Image (cartoon, rainbow, N blue to C red):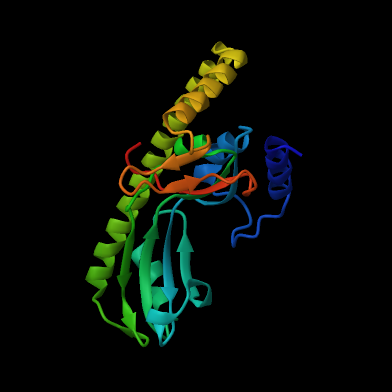
Length: 238
């Protein structure tokens, strides 16, 4: 089975599985983006979150506790209000933190060049401790201030999702036009010519290997690796 067929089989298998997220479905604000990616043969998504405001209780030794062992006091994919946070904080027994997490997509890509289209990161987040050992460490006025910031980030996150979707759609359409207007024979000829040229410059190096200029070490691409590349996407400048 060639790599393209293996990728298609892997994609079909993954997309047929049940959604194991807490919500059990794709978030409304990211549905179109997920559908756009899954509708292209070179991509498929494995998980997604459109962005959320959460209140977590990390327990007594919160600094060392993993996320999956936390108590989720509040989770919303929409702007929240102070009263909801205050009520949720009363359930905290350890170190509770208020977080805003932006859009996250985990995407499998058929080839490295496909993954490069999605290479975007962001630091558009928020994480603030509110309690220690169940005791509230800040004022309600400060909590209200934090909620306003988190809600502002949520609104900005929605705008970034839309910009990212439009830019990605444009890039994929441009790629499709480029591929259909350029004969496959020319692409094959160009690739073969490129490999031959590299061999002439350095006969000891084979095509499919890259050399860093700094230390002249080879970075080999193994044809037997998994047929996809996992990419985490955080919209920032789109």
